[in-house]
Length: 281
Image 1 (cartoon, one colour):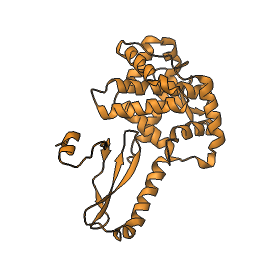
Image 2 (tube, one colour):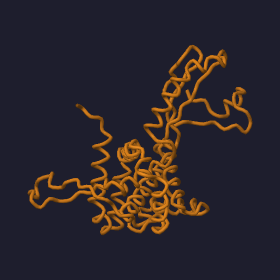
Image 3 (spheres, helix red, strand yellow):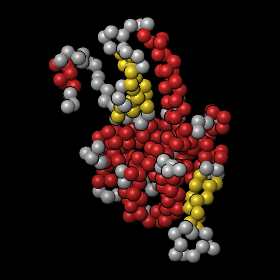
Image 4 (cartoon, helix red, strand yellow):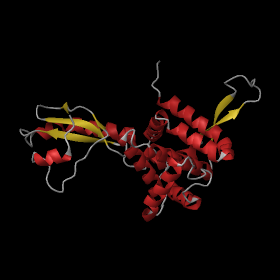
């Protein structure tokens, strides 16, 4: 049974002005000692945090005894997702530096009826390549948010990614809601809000932002977990059908753009499925 905020107030468990945090999901409490436990919690930004759980009998002497285990959990969490929300930027900077940008290329030596005639090829991308990907991702997040009646938690996650991506590329904050509402209206009317090759983000701002970050993040500071995290998040939106819906919307409204982007999109989907599916070996 889900207890409402008003019920919490009625029980005297929620003070006036105090907000309730509803995590997207949380693990069961794992007790490290009789009166101290912890659990992992995922917020609407898709990132994990650790909550330390105590009860009415917990004493200050109980914490030092389990602190080493708490630190271990924290270190594992950081290794998985990085220290902050720069994972997205670390990954695209890593692609710029290391040639991890994947696209499908047709091998003319393989017969047309062979499904394996397209090969995954990696190369160093241009800023424009990453700009197009970012505009496609914005469209995916927007489509998921437009279906919030299906799942409010997923909609909240999508809205966060949509806003965070725009915000980090210096999209004017006062214009955000106006953009969101206008884009949603387009979605509901069957229109694609933007051509992903031109997008809603200013390309020069996008490029300047990445150039600034390249100076800030070196190859040595790159967290290998970042790519896995991003692919895992994208797989979530892929499973929910938002990649497919975005693809169909582009094909309907911008057929030439769809034809140009499809090899890259197919490569992205192949990479997402390949690198986020557990090995059976």
